[in-house]
Length: 261
Ligand code: NAD
Image (cartoon, rainbow, N blue to C red; front, side, top):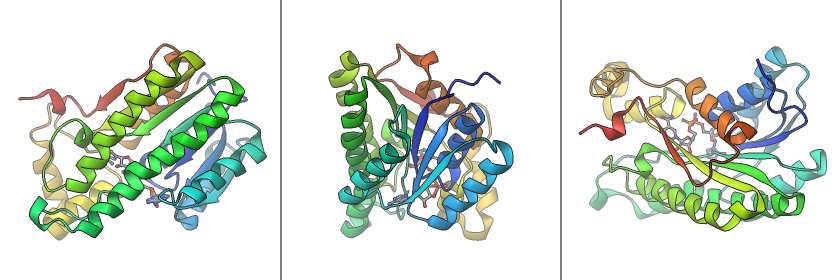
C-alpha cells in the first residue's frame, strides 16, 4: 500500500472504537504517527494493541479526555504538539447517538448532553487544532457528521441538531481557512456496523436487533450496512494530499440511501 502519511501526525478523537479505531488502523498502516483521544482509556488500549499487531513501527500517543470539556480539549491538543511537534490531520470524530425519542419526549438534559459532545466537542477541537495548523502553515480536518446531519431521520432531536450543526461548522471554517492551506471537510456515514449502531438497533428491537438491522437495510440501494473500513478509507483520502483541492465537502458514505426517494 502507498504510504501517504509517512512523517505525518494524525490526531483522532473517539479512537477507542468503531470509526475512529478503523481510521487509526488505516492511517497507521500508511505510516502515520498517531495521537488517539477517547473518554475510555481501556478502549484506547485496545486500539493501541491492534495497531501494534498490524503496524508495529507506528508511534502512538494515547490521551484520555472528554471532548465536551473545552479545557480537556486544549490539553489533548497541547499534549499532541508537545510529543510530535505538529498536527497534519485531525479526525474530529468522537460522538454519541443519545437516547431515541420523539421531540416532545426528548429529555432536555439528554439534548444538551448530545450537543455537548457531538457539536461543542467538534467546535472546541477545531478551535484548538486550527491554531496549531495556522502556525505550521496548513493541515486537514475531517469532522464527523452523519446522514442525520443532512436528512431528517426521526427520534433523534439531539443527534440531528448536533450533526446538522457539524455540517454548518465544517462549511463555515472551510471558507475561512482555505486560503491558509487548511482544508475542512466532513464525512456523513449512513448506518455503519459499529458498537454505536448496534446500541441504536438494540434501542429499537432489543435482542432482535440483528433482524431490525436487516429490515433497516432493506431500503438501502446496496441492501447492507456499511463497514468501518469503508468510512476509514474516505477519511484517510480526505486527510491526505490526494484530496488537496477538496474543501468544505460533506461526503455521504451510505450506499446511496440519502439520495433515494
Ligand atoms: P462508537 O460508539 O463505536 O465509538 C465512539 C467512540 O467515541 C467511543 O470509543 C467512545 O468512548 C468515544 N467517546 C464518546 N463520547 C466521548 C467523549 N465525550 N469524549 C471522548 N470520547 C468519547 O461510535 P462510531 O459508530 O464509531 O461513531 C463515531 C462517530 O461517527 C460519531 O460521531 C458518530 O455520530 C458518527 N457516525 C457514526 C455512524 C455509524 O453508523 N456508526 C453513522 C454516522 C455518523
